[in-house]
Image 1 (tube, rainbow, N blue to C red):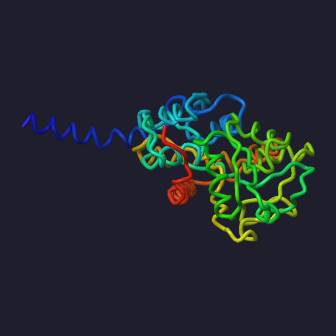
Image 2: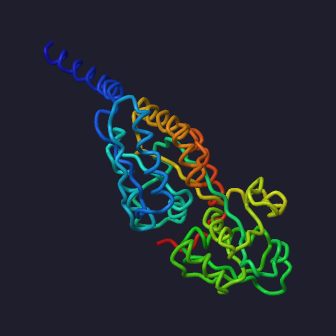
Length: 319
């Protein structure tokens, strides 16, 4: 009889423990992993939202932004993936930056995006085509009409920038030659400005600062509705699927987060992103925030997987 009571007590404890944990959550500080070095765009978003998110959690705790760079973000992503599923470790994810290695089958990958608990989205940045200000090319059609390969600058063959250039030029029917090996987005945009190539394909926010300095013109955006006056959008180019070429900033926790904990984090994050203080930060910094809930984040991830799996031959060699 005593053994039966002990067994029943154990079972009840196993059922009620997660419920109690969810009711008390959060009871300590939450680590917000940033899988890149300080100072970049993803770092900026997390550090802006952290103090606002603290105010929207049901308990008073600190959000602790933690930079864990290396391996293109894979190290930080793996830390979130392997974390205890208690809600005290979450992270921001570059999609497709962290998705492409998974589709490609990189051997050393230590996370599975499809198993993560998705909590929300800061939004997506579209891609576009830029040329030096003095370039004779005014439209994407001008590039397509050339009787020689168009020289595009990009980072290495395993990068998403390289893959995006391959995919976009294939969809648009542009003959290409890719000049690669630049370290990052700023580097390959500066490369086309100084004459290393004819054009560049990259995230619009990266190119816009060079437009503002008068060094670059954006002649096409891979958006359903162009955010750049006078630049064709994806639909006008006849390739609406180009809008899938974007950089998403999604937030996730490890697999198997208790549903109530995930709900608390997701709802608090959404409230923080919609807070007037976040809107003020966005206006003053010029950095857009497009709040998305857990369902939105999952939808973005699924759409990106479907898109890049169709173009997996352009994703470069597995590492």
